[in-house]
Image 1 (cartoon, rainbow, N blue to C red):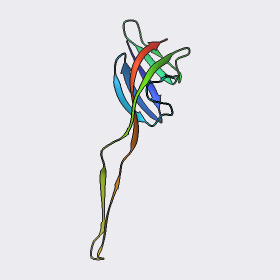
Image 2 (tube, one colour):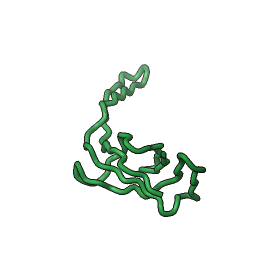
Image 3 (tube, rainbow, N blue to C red):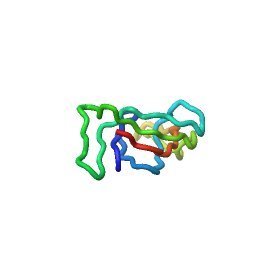
Image 4 (cartoon, helix red, strand yellow):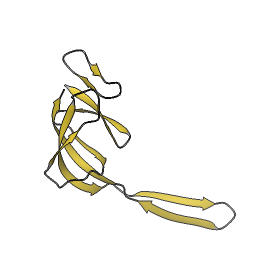
Length: 103
């Protein structure tokens, strides 16, 4: 059984036991949270497709860690002007594990 969930404007296809990195969510490490934005549920039966959400469906997930991705280096330059600079960015994320899909 799998589900398509929406989180921070992004869609993820998840099934039980999957671990994924999503945008930062509030909550302590080890707590369980419920994701209610379920767009589709599929698996053994015919898929349930929401318009836009599947009613009564939810996904339970456990927070494993809060961390940052690897650094992205951004180099900016304007030719013939002597202008160049290097900046970087590390995007924070929350790692979650899917415990249960209901619906």
